[in-house]
Amino acid sequence: MYGQGVPQDYREAFHWFSRAAEKHYLAGQASLGYLYEKGLGIPHDCDKALKYLTKPAKSLPFSRSRI
Image: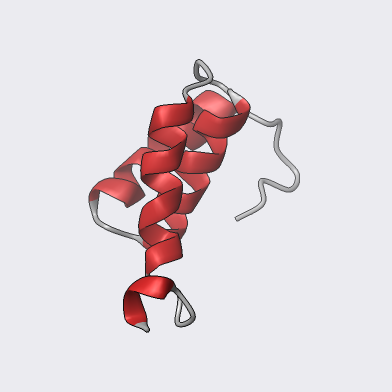
């Protein structure tokens, strides 16, 4: 999960996180949002980061949408 023992490859991470996000996997969406936020392996994009980070945050048990 953390890429231990292999070289870091953010482009490859982007590929797999994108696939996970497409299947509505919350950890994949959050990870993809992080890559967009930091510009790791892809161009920095605040709008896409917000899009992918908001979906998992809304599903948290203490989120405003569930109160």
